Structure formats: structure tokens, C-alpha cells
Image (tube, rainbow, N blue to C red; front, top):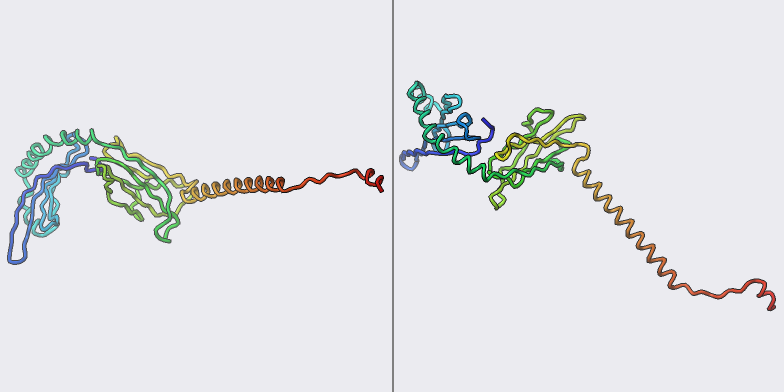
Length: 262
């Protein structure tokens, strides 16, 4: 199954219990998660929540229950075992997932927009590392997306920060992921983007030969030098023109003629 849970279909069963001023609220949630319309890419979850906290869940991929409290452990020792329990969950997959996933998937496929990705160097947040990269994905739809960093082919999990999917206001989204690091000669750093609009993960390699801030400084410096040359040339032309206009021509005589008049 893809790492992206592109959509989910929910069925909520609610129950509540109140005692004095304190109350307890819980609910069951049936969730269909999928990355394609193929049955093998559909994952069914039966989750139990209490006061907004996940207490335990059943996962169709492993066909096992995972519990997070002692109360759920006692409950699942009898309720989450046996052929009858598994048969009931398989019937729920057919009823709630298999019949609805193709419809939702077709809608998402028709509306999907591929992200525009930009990889650049920026100033680090702290002084612990010498450099920082930011990988930005713009104007994509639907919302779920995964942006990760690879360093020499291995996923980087430390010194990575990322924003949530930000709403653009036109049904599209954007996201920004930052990587702080200390450069090493010969290494390969890449930003990997996974999205519903892409048939496979897309890699964007960073070229360390011309980091972003240095490139900007060079461009600004070149523009400044060009403007300086233009202003100097214009000044020289103006000076020579004004010098020519203010000059008075005086007739001269040859030296022999002057001696002759004396």
C-alpha cells in the first residue's frame, strides 16, 4: 500500500456516559483508507476512541488488534479473536469499502493536480548547522502529500521540519519542508515528493555547486556592476559634451607672420 492515505470513508457509531459534572464520550470509527481502487490497496480500520483518545484498533492489513489501555486489553482478549470476528470485519470491508472506494477514487483521479516543486537554499534557523534547504510543493490537489529528504539514498528523519498543507484559497494546497545539515563533499541530497497525481515518487536533486544565497549575491553584484558601468559612461559623455559647449575658439597666427609685423 502506498504511504499516502489519499482518502477515507467513515462510519461513526457514538455512545456516551455522563456522571455528575464529569462526562465520558466515546465512539467507534470504521475507516477505509486507499491509494487505488484495487482491493489489495484498501486498508480497513476499526477504531475505538474515548474522550478523543485512541484506545485501540483493528487493522485489516495485519488482521490484528492493537490496544493502548488496560481496559481495551481486557476487552480484546475475547472480542478481537476467532473466525467470527474476522468474518464480520471482512463483510464490513465489502460493504463499506469495496463498493465506495472506486467512486471516490475516480473523482480524485479526475480532479488531481500535480504539485510544482521548488528546491532552494536558505539561511539556517540556528548555528548548529552550516546550511539549510527548503523543498516547497505548490498548487497541488488533493490535499494529502508526503515530502521527505534523502541523503545518499537514505531517508533523513532528524533536523527536518515541515509545515502542514496550507490552503491557497482556490482548492489547491502548498507545503514547505526544511532540512538543516552540514555539507559533505560528494554527497547527494534529494527531496522526494509523493502525491496522488504522480504515478510514482518524484525526486528533486539538490545541486550544491551554486547554493541559492550565493547565486543571488552574484546576480545582484553583476547587476550592480553593470549599472555602475552605465552610469560612468553616461557621466563621461555628459562631461565631454558640456566641455565642448563652453570652449571659445581663438584665432592663431603663425610665428613668422608675428615677427614680420614687429
